[in-house]
Amino acid sequence: MAGKLLPMVDDAPEQPQAGRTRRDFLLAGVRTGSVVAAGGLLTILAKAPAAAGTVWQIDPDKCTQCGLCATNCVLQPSAVKCVHTYAMCGYCKLCFGLLKDKRTGNTLSVENSRCPTDAIKRVFVEDPYYEMHIEENLCIGCGICVKGCTRFGNGSMYLQIRHDRCVNCNECGIARACPAGAISRVSVKTPYKLKTRRA
Ligand code: SF4
Ligand code: SF4
Ligand code: SF4
Image (tube, rainbow, N blue to C red; front, side, top):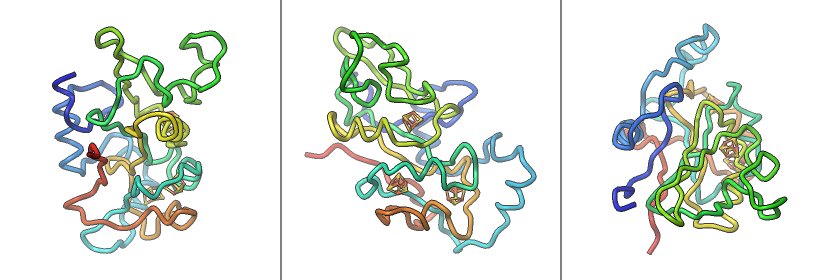
């Protein structure tokens, strides 16, 4: 646990990477992923004029996990993914981001999981601690886990627009629909709004 001091995200869904690599990517902010590069439509969208030097991002402190991030992105699955700040996480055995608060038995079975796509993997660290990994290729950005973690846990899970996927639409469909006004343009130099441990 001592080494888990920085936020991590799964930026390369095809092959899980070590924390430093994922952190480096997160801070670097922009990378053309194979998912984005694959489609002609995406290439066209990427050419849409956008405010120079800016990209769209979610303010996790404003987001209410309404679910529209999963459905209002021009991409399917959405460019919005759950990310995890390990420095805030309690490494709970019964993670409320992963597990429903009312469970049948005490198992990790699908019926007890909040995630509709099985994108959260629980990895044993040491008794009684577990580390949650988000598999971004499976995540649809629904925010259900974020709501559970925010309500019952430390709030270490939250939603971010991932810039290896987002095509930086001139007008972000999610920003237009967001009831919380949580999405705005930010500088490409600071493309993520990371949570930090609160005192
Ligand atoms: S639309 Fe806004 S409030 Fe809803 S999940 Fe996305 S960022 Fe959060
Ligand atoms: S519950 Fe939704 S936001 Fe959370 S990991 Fe699963 S698909 Fe992603
Ligand atoms: S700008 Fe918004 S709608 Fe467009 S790809 Fe990015 S997150 Fe999706």
